[in-house]
Image (cartoon, rainbow, N blue to C red; front, side, top):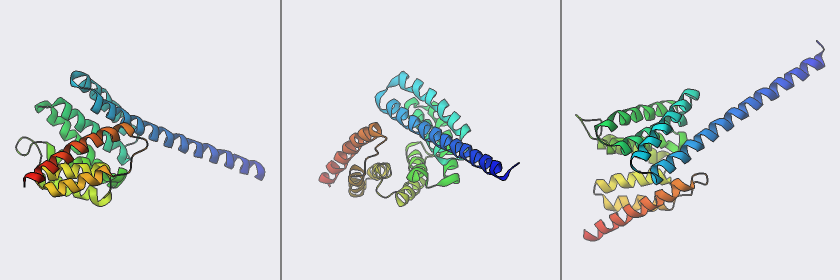
Length: 220
């Protein structure tokens, strides 16, 4: 084979490889954004049985995403977020298995890359430890919750979710001043251009808990 032909084939194969990488990147980003948008829609706009059914379908899609990209922490994070949200919608003892699955998903994400999505695995895991019952029913533990939430803040000190959930934890701990400060930071966090629905409802939640913290402070 002539040298010029070899060079030509090398260039063509290189372009094909780059094209495949670009397509894979686009597929990954598009699917991640799809799950984020669908989660916001299901979590905030649906109720009751329709919400449970939608979370069940979405959890299956998240599992497929993990199977396709098991080496990416983001897939495990969003599988965990969907599993934990599904658990919250389901409630009762039936939610415990979902909460345990979510815990494993977040732990796997941390094992792969604990800084992925600005430390979201720590935020979500800390919130899970805070909200599920403690021993002997489940694994809930406020000391662990605090540690995970503070790790999330160390990675993303101005993030909307990291500050909102830490503020919520502080509110439940009756540290109203600290809760207020973190709600204010969350309120002023930069908007997420690709996630307007999630931001819209998160800001509503921030306002509700910020008002609650301020009312508690006035009583003390």
